Amino acid sequence: MGKTKKGWLSMLVLIMSVALIVSACGKDSGEKNNSGSKNEGKNESANSEKPVELIWYTIGTPQKDVDRVMEEVSKYTKEKIGVTVKMNMIDWGDYTQKMQVMTASGEPMDIMFTSSWAFNYVQNARKGAFYDITELLQEHGKGIVDTLDPAFLEGSKVDGKNYGVPANKELPAQEVWRFNKDLLDKHNLSFDGVYTLESLEPLLKQIKELEPEIIPFAADKSFGPYIPYDYVIEAMPFAVPLNTTDYKIVNVLETEEMKQALTTMHKYYKAGYLPTEAATLDSLTDIQTTGKWFADKATTQPFADNLWSQKGYPVVSTPQSEPYVFNWSVMGSMQAISANSEYPEKAMEFLNLLNTDPVLRNMVDSGIEGVHYKKVSDNVMENLPENKNYDMPTFSLGNIMLTYLNPSDPENKWEVFKEFNDAGKSAPLLGFNFDATPVATELATLSNVKEEFWTALMTGTVDPEEYLPKAIEKFKAAGFDKVMAEMQKQLDEWLANNK
Image 1: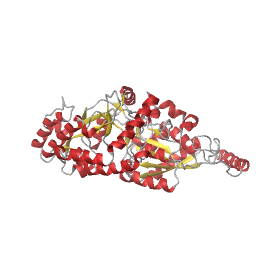
Image 2: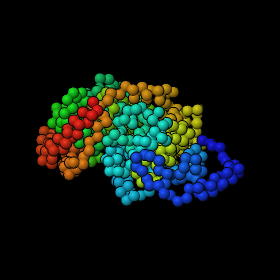
Image 3: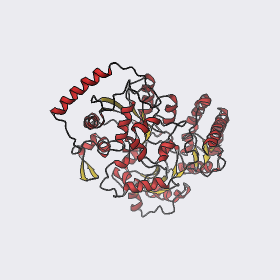
Image 4: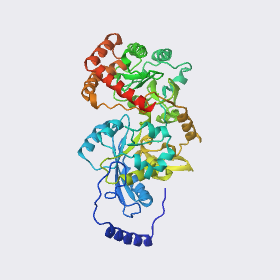
């Protein structure tokens, strides 16, 4: 990860250049233009030698060596594009709330992680938290544009504009059943023929009898059974079927697919297959760490089994859906530039470098070579013990297809990723982003109803025969039909303009 150091002659040139620039530029006179055009008043000129500091907020458990790694990152980026980087990590569960508070208060920042599931990308783009980077992508982000599958940038537009850079990763979402392979092997069990929720039952029954201390079906409060629908808002009951031809939004709680899934989940809950506290369980981390589980549900990517098996025991999986490209999968990991950034052009230059330069991308991802990891070959690495102080969430930091392989990864890993992306089918609502402003009050009330019923129903904790009609009635009383009519109106307008 070395770089060429400048000698004393370069330093002399630097001093002279700064003096000339200061005398030529005078005071700032420009105003920030949030259309992505050149901001001469607040941005350093492209060939300025004076580095600017970019403040980067991202998600994940704060790591001990972040500042140490960013010192090395800054040496590299200072030489490449004239910037240094200050990274601030906010833990998973706190990220959304803390970022909302900081952006509302005008906290200085330049780059921030956003997604469909944390610090909501669409909502915050519409609130004005993010800089419109549509033109910046063309001026300073050509590498990003050339690298990404066009579906990433097209599918992440909000009202026709780009406000974030999606990570180049798996594009479709495909649901799978995961299994603890040690338990499969121990009891000579096979998941052949398992696809639907109902088809899990024989295996769950056997494990319950054979391993009474094991959780047959691991699920927490985020669980939702897979049904073939595309949701207008994630985890809210407005959706269209994946095979729709009329694009009519329905209440999924009233569909036969959901009724059947909830009935099966309640059957499994009563049989003792799920954790008794599933509806209030924040995370499966503790259960997965101990390995005391047999099956669960996950969203996959190529060679995901290798990744999941790094907990100390082997994990295998089998599909329960086809791969579809949803809004939430396109927006699953993004970096946005703050609307209040002092240096939007430099921020875009950094994001462009991060997503196209393997040296920078792997430094940000894996730390310092020889300290946190060692190279096994040109594109293969192994973690060193100090990795415990810099263990980053790879998916959240940009183009994953630039990252080094692990020894267990096949050489063609990234080629297979591209094939997986090419095979994904477009979900019917891909590119449609509902504007909740006209029905914000009703949606807030509906969210309260959801909190009352959703997790209990989805985890099978309550009997859907009794509670599903109650939930449907309360949703309607809270303004469900008004919200759905507004959604349908906007969807029809979008279809008229885009189909």
